[in-house]
Length: 120
Image (cartoon, rainbow, N blue to C red):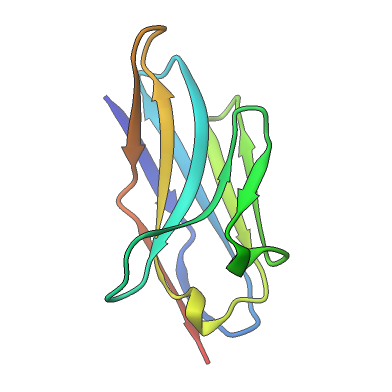
């Protein structure tokens, strides 16, 4: 079994910064794309940022220039540095990853989420 565990959420004032971390553990052969999603109250879950196995990042337009996603292949971690936070960044942030359990089987996994609240 594979687990994704997020950390680093919290309450911050607008304009502040937070850093989210996610670590994958369990039966892992390799990890492909990793990403961060968020879900605000009453809204659908949306992609915030993702990073391919080769380190190529992709960002939602709403966070470009403010958020940075990085990963450590050796540690099976993915981080999200969030700067210049806005109240509309508030939500539960979920880690997501495509994990190869063996050379034949790849599954998509979700973490349980971490709350980010940005006050105005």
